[in-house]
Length: 432
Ligand code: H79
Image (cartoon, rainbow, N blue to C red; front, side, top):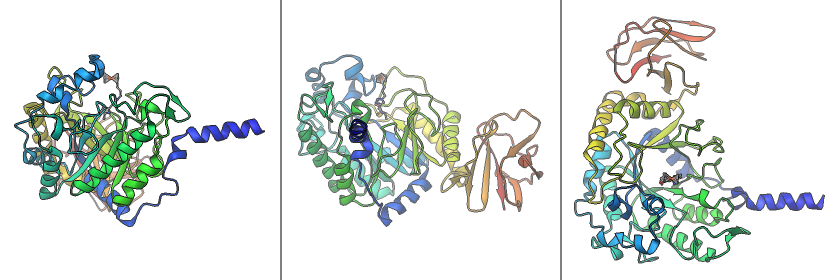
């Protein structure tokens, strides 16, 4: 019995939940922020760092086995003279995005902001000498776009993190774990207090040390103390840990596990967000021409909305600070689609029927939007399952043609012969 108790105790100690912000009750302002977050639906993810200079993704130090001390030299060549915060924010707006999440520090440990905690930062270590995060934060405020910071828990270079050192009793054998935790707390304090209007922190890298004591109780507690409405998410690929305010998915719609990352990511009851790349890379990759089409990306957005999830779509700006024309072009076309169809996306809450072979459903108040994304095989009708209401009108969203329908045991059957053809999405609007 004793042994069993000890075993359970040890298990508890090593589960992330044991180190969570137990008993966390989100503030009123945080709950409001969550609803607003769910309304926004579409955001721009930005991966930018000194790795961008090599044009081979943000993992280049690892994949090309570059020793840290050599990798550090990249800072000497990082001089993004063409960076213009207004251009980035304009682009996000034009694409129909409502928020930006940007890498303040990735696994390479380089801080893309002005920090007193380490000289390995863009102001001190590069010829650029400016703080693009400050410029971005100010421009976001000006244009009414929310700003969130990506922040890596994992650090490949710091001696106190001691990358690859085995974890014993929650701390790395080598290194100085307390020093590392304190460093992160100090940087997060800077990010929250020095940058106007920051609305979220997006953690990543937990999976590098699943058994470490990450001190989430202190870290999340600190963030919520500094900004009760700041939303915390953590890409740990697990069920939400107490203290978090949204649940992040990587390259998977919630409930899917195509990447192999999401097997343990039980869906909790927090707002959801899924992120995806425009080609196959997060950080700028000069050799990745595997661009997703406008149609694929709009479908991703619509399918995410159908599951009540936001879509955070990534660009990796080039080392000069420009976003490559292929991305700009595609984002513009997505924006044109949203200009026409945004009503069926923003502010919706998923109707929460499983995605159907023909497409998916979004809903807002007493309006339901059926998105016919795929060819309809069995004749010219779709079935919306579990439709419990008496429809007032069933029309084509585009053009307003009245559509025939009937209700039976399977749900609401809508005849879509009169639904105009569309390459991307044929939308039925139903009010009740
Ligand atoms: O920031 C982005 C990624 O760098 C980070 N999360 C997103 C948002 C991420 N880190 N790790 N992973 C995602 C999963 C690990 C993927 C890897 Fe690999 C496979 C690491 C090594 C093999 C991909 C392929 C990266 C390098 C080679």
